[in-house]
Image (cartoon, rainbow, N blue to C red; front, side):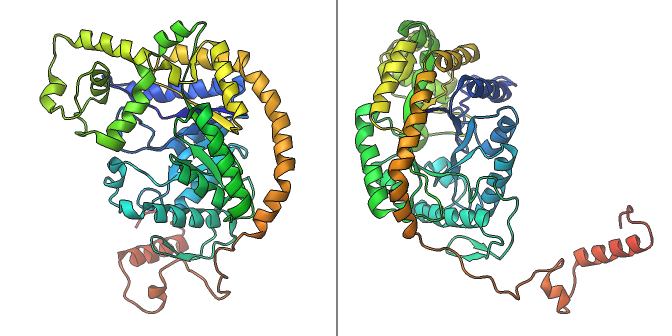
Length: 453
């Protein structure tokens, strides 16, 4: 079983001028250490307009920086949001290709469709069509990565003429593809497409076994891959990470950070009422832990400097500590090791721990301790398990690839595009752009190519 980390870049209030910068730079240091400590990979989310909960709106830039600071860590998009209003699939293909080259072939292409109204309404697209958008955009992105040239696409949500999309990724035909899953039905969808399942549901070891078994059963019987490769893998999320010499120390160190991820989901995806730039998600979170109902809190409650603030924060911390058993990565090395073994026995291919909002030095120590005291035995067993899995699935994958359906169309051999719009070559009236280009060409002919018209 591989072990990886999940990064969302939470920045809880109160903020100072350097809060966001500090979180990003400390996260780079943490992932550099994870690379040396033996973690298999890092997954970086993409979220927009979700202040405090996740400031990871440009994961491709963070991963590009990380690609030059690490040598073996797999660099996962967890996930790229594929509705074209957020990310055009050709731009996705270009960025994945460039990142894969920069990282020497270490990219994992996690995908998803967006779920929060912060993003769906923020980018103005129909939530009832986001699954269809994801599927069409995924096909276009994969074709753009693999076809030379890309023969074009005319669909419901994406229209692209023939072009040779560059750069191509180092991993051929493309990096491993995954999809975000929060329900068993989506895990089955991943299996039917022959791609990896990124399960973000906290199912625990007992709940993971049926998900894994169901995935591999559907994969063998029903998978129809999009490309000439299959990524048979199930990743499971195991909660926050905080390792310390004792369970009590680990719980003390993570503090209120232990439940902030879950509350952020509740706030942005379920029942929160958010006032951009005004709502303090952290204050609402701690008040909810203290037993106060603040989902309908107005601006007055947000700004009031109440005398009992310290009291409800102490109560919130006491309640947060009661949830520590739900997080497999919170505790002593011995406790975390045993919980990880339970996931391993459940057949999970990869286990992912969330990096919570906590002190940098405590997160660094957690990564170092897990890497030195826990991960080596899992890495050793994973080498053997990976070989056995490859042998077991070889005939299955062969049958799956026989069911593959071909995408795209043949390119018209007469197709071309020029340096100027075709309408200009047909005698249409030019614009200021053509006049400027003619002036620039004349200057170059007169040896004044550096002058501007």
